[in-house]
Amino acid sequence: MPLESLPLTPAPRTMTWIRRLAAGTALALVGACAGTADFYPTKGDVKPHPGVARAKAHPIQGIDVSKWQGPIDWASVRSAGTQFAFIKATEGGDHVDDRFRENWVGAARAGVPRGAYHFVFWCRSAKEQMDWFKANVPNDPNALPPVLDVEWNGHSQKCPKKLPKAEALAMTQYMLQEMEAYTGKRPIIYTDITFHKDVLEGELEDYPHWLRSTAAEPENRYVNRRWMLWQFTSTGRVPGVRGDVDRNAFYGTQAEWASFMATDCDPRHYRRLSAAGLCADK
Image (cartoon, rainbow, N blue to C red; front, side, top):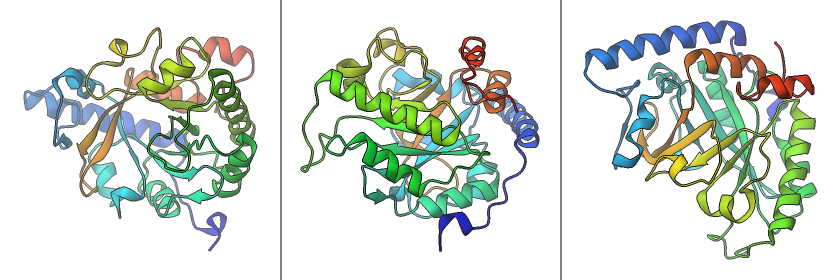
């Protein structure tokens, strides 16, 4: 069945902001009464690292998933206080995650705000990859902004090489522009320490960044990079997900999250970017 024909029944975003704020406040009170700094004490971590302990104190928490999480009970994920999910959609120019369609629909039905991410394969052209993304990811106005996942493909026997910085940066910029033109939303850049140091350091300041740092706070691993999202563990536990799952934190308050949901822009960039017509006003 084509993805576009699958029934989607997400609640209007205006109402879900209110519900999220109320749910987050209630869970924060539960955590305070239990004597823990974690805003969402029903979540956990099999291998917690003391260097990232403060991530759990951020009031807006989410996950990212792919086929490796298996079937997900999205209603339980939502009941646990999860306020966002990023779902692997595409990779390179010829691969769709096996559970993308299932997760995309399931998260929406459960009322979990969700966005799609594309994993870049450096041995395919940027145009091929964005053509593939557009062909397989619905342009849903209720979705979170799309994510461009830029890491080196060192795990791949087919494409272990690193490109020169200028070439990798040009490809990244093209894909970000195509994602924004397709969805009307400012994309988020996900990256790790190595790729950031090799390619992104000092670049693309006008985009929100989602940084992986599982042993220290991002400020200690990334040079002069302000983060919007922080992936702080890959061994998280969340009701509704079997086994390990990546856990993530939003940098700011519930009010700042509501601003992001309303504009699709990092609140700290909103004034400058909205003047250039790069933020939504719903």
